[in-house]
Image (tube, rainbow, N blue to C red; front, side, top):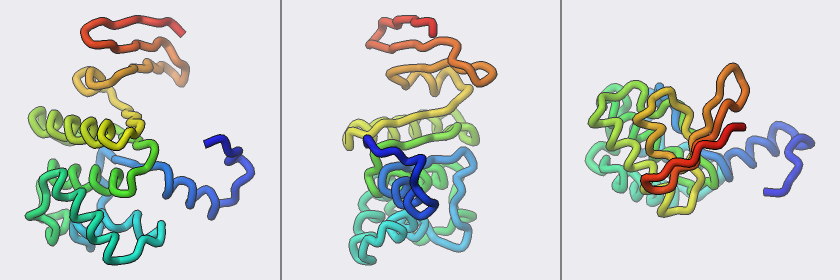
Length: 171
């Protein structure tokens, strides 16, 4: 956003992350003692969103990911796909500018993986958000508009996807 964050202290960095970044993890990283609604509300607490508004926002996004019937369920009462959808809802709930997803389908079966990818893409497009996905799975990478291939910490190549046509650019 044009700011030099290298001069920020930990509190300033946390506030900036909370306001502008969302994270989807391969291992879900849900809080076991909280139900789905509470897990999704968590990032909004740090942004000081009032409780009633947090609940409304969390319920709305849980409905969008198809989990309105599971709001009172704790993580151990849900399937892997349901837990991942809670994680997606948590990442997207505050409409951050950028969502980082680390192997978001790594623990899921093929059908659930496709559903999770469709949900993330639909929400990112609807809210004009940038979605950055780290994956080793070519089927997940195929959803991208741009694929950056990295080997040993270096950019090896970049593929720009346009419909059925792929441009291959060597970096």
